[in-house]
Amino acid sequence: MASLAKVLTVSLCVLFLALRWTSPTFDPETLRGARVLVTGASSGIGEQMAYHYARFGAQIVITARREKVLQQVVEECLRLGAQKAVSIAADMSTDSDPDRVVDSALETLGGLDFLVLNHIGPSYLRMWDGDHEHVRQLMKINFHSYVQMAGRALPFLEQTRGALVVVSSIGGSTPYVAPYTSTKFALNGFFGSLHHELAMKKSNVSISICTLGLIDTASAMKHVRFFSDMPAYPAADAALNIIITGATRQRELFYPWFTQLMALTKDWSPSLSDYIIQKFYKTS
Image 1 (cartoon, rainbow, N blue to C red):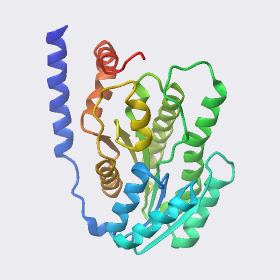
Image 2 (cartoon, rainbow, N blue to C red; image 1 turned 120 degrees about the vertical axis):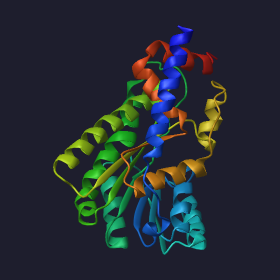
Image 3 (cartoon, helix red, strand yellow; image 1 turned 180 degrees about the horizontal axis):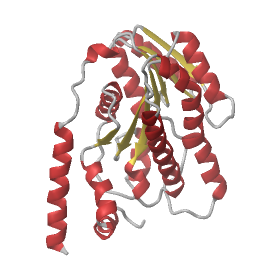
Image 4 (cartoon, rainbow, N blue to C red; image 1 turned 90 degrees about the horizontal axis):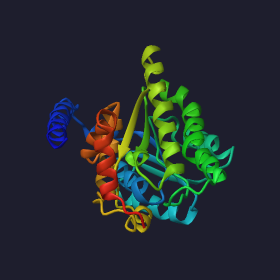
């Protein structure tokens, strides 16, 4: 078993490096003046994406629930060099706000080049206790609103050869997050299928699915530290990698690098994957 694991690990590393070497070159100038809508941008990865887009000279609309915090992010974006920065307070658990945000962004920016879907609803980190209502509500925010916003924006992204960027998570393979896991598997399945459909129609729109490991956002670190000793990676770096992936129209991102190995290991060697996961997570 040990020798098989070593061979598998080496093989995955070689495959990973081969994929890395074929990545396209990113030109920051392609984002100057770009019209961007970023969701979940009041804190964490979304906030950091807003700042990076601002430094590249983009025109930005950001959205989240907390209006006062959004205003602070807007002010910082303008200070960093955004050509335009506007906020829209919205609640993605409602039926109307996902469409309203897209419509407002289109009106404010006069079009759309990038739709970056990053928001998530509040969720617990513990063993599932049978609470179906929480799963249903989280699915509304983390999945259905993504689909709703994508559907609203696609005709306009088609006009601009735009990009749809979806932030997902390797957390779909870990314990204590069953409700959250269900939403991420749904995202990967839906937008993975939509990617093929757009390609078959020779659409102008690219879809990038960004799979993240543990990131050092305040909300993540507040809960995860009680259950896992896994290292956390910087939100600013994750945000930059997401932006580059969308700007270069790559199909997927795995950040940090070993999340791709984790995903491949889960499919190729479930027993090894189980061992790794259970090694890093505590039972209490």
